[in-house]
Amino acid sequence: MLTIATLNEFGVNTKEGLTRCMNNEKFYFRMLGMGLKSDQFEKLGAALEGGNLDEAFEAAHALKGVLGNLALTPIYTPLAEMTELLRAKKSEDYVTMYAPILELRNKLLALV
Image (cartoon, rainbow, N blue to C red; front, side):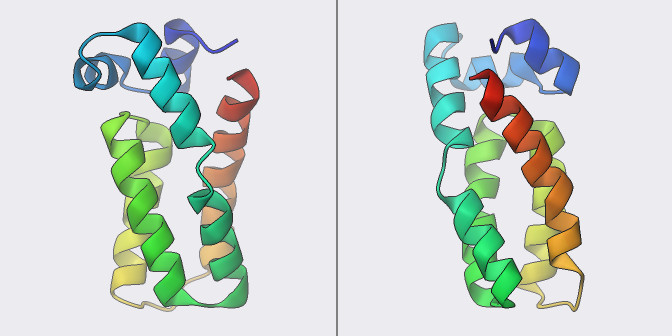
């Protein structure tokens, strides 16, 4: 079960996330569930696997906004870095870079 304490253990800035959700814990958890279940994660993975940097950028940018608003820092920070690399169309091993992001997302999702 996902709790504030569990999120804190993962390094989530729950104080900031709750503030953005009017300190309404029920609303925050609802938004977390929606954010973690976003199909943008799958779109990003498929675009990266296919080498489509434009589509990958669009998905990463969308996720960056959602995850930033929820203060999911451990996922947001590496995703924000990836987003900027994709924006610049830098040659990187994005699939490898994405793996730990997806792994943490799946761990949190399993607790929702």
